[in-house]
Length: 371
Ligand SMILES: NC(=O)c1ccc[n+]([C@@H]2O[C@H](COP(=O)([O-])OP(=O)(O)OC[C@H]3O[C@@H](n4cnc5c(N)ncnc54)[C@H](O)[C@@H]3O)[C@@H](O)[C@H]2O)c1
Ligand SMILES: [Zn+2]
Image 1: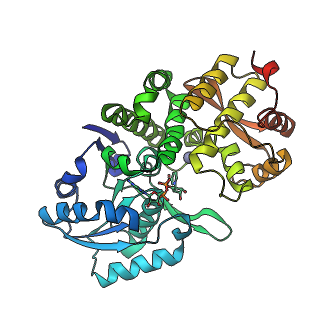
Image 2: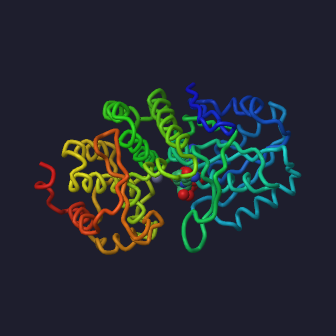
Image 3: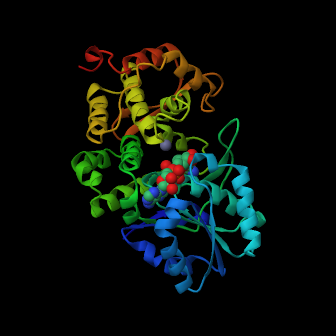
């Protein structure tokens, strides 16, 4: 078992990572919670697979588990779902000293966390992430919330859990596409923070894709350690935390331009990382081998690297200009200077972005730019 500490003064908390620790959830909860009731929030697929184990483990540790399922999927990330969960909490007589526990992917974690942050002005919160994305990203750092019809994640809070329990064995039931998409975020941590981790991924990617348990534990724990380091330095996104958005400016634009239908998030981020690395190359921050290493590892992970030819560069640029990360009308990007080191660059000229978007389109010849 690997334990990663998220250092946030009085709000510090541990992340436990290992295969098979879901069985011990009740014991961990005993260590970190004082109340009697735990409202477990999940969705139907995860509930079917892991609900009974979780309830049993909590019961054996002396808790009274209450159970609430949300519909699941991004469409469920709404204030209506939040209200249903308040109803369930009141119905189950959840009190101020009790806890809300998220069992599932990022959707369940974000919604349940928002309920925990606001029900009776805040009750204890526990994250039990069951997707790779949730284990390496959404369960760490305390961002919780829901979507508004006008945009994603517009309603929310920063609210840290008491602990996170990531049972990597739960990833065995996850569709392979979701594993690969999660690995894009894992690679991102190597690029923004630690060359040695990126090099380790280059060595172990096949083992990771086959879900070798030691490799997965190391990848999840290292990702959490890196995200925790970034979040500890900047809990509420004043500065450094923005580096977590590497690959995401283009990635979000791709998701929006395709109505969130064509790509799962990590796939869009994969394409975005290649595009933003090439932007760094064009602007003179990154040397060609850096771009090559990122693109090569994505290929071996069987993630997409190209922008689909039918997406117009202008459409992507328009979304980027609308994106909330554009400060004062200027395009801001997180650009790698090397594998393991990035720089936040403001005022990137739109022409450079357009040129790179064209270069990255499927079928475009790019021999000149990289060799
Ligand atoms: N809070 C943050 O910092 C943060 C960061 C990144 C993403 N997010 C949010 O996370 C959400 C995406 O999360 P996600 O990718 O985990 O998607 P998700 O929560 O929608 O889960 C994907 C699907 O996988 C199923 N599933 C979950 N675990 C499973 C398992 N072990 N076996 C089989 N099926 C399983 C779920 O039922 C769901 O249908 C988005 O809403 C995004 O905004 C939040
Ligand atoms: Zn992401």
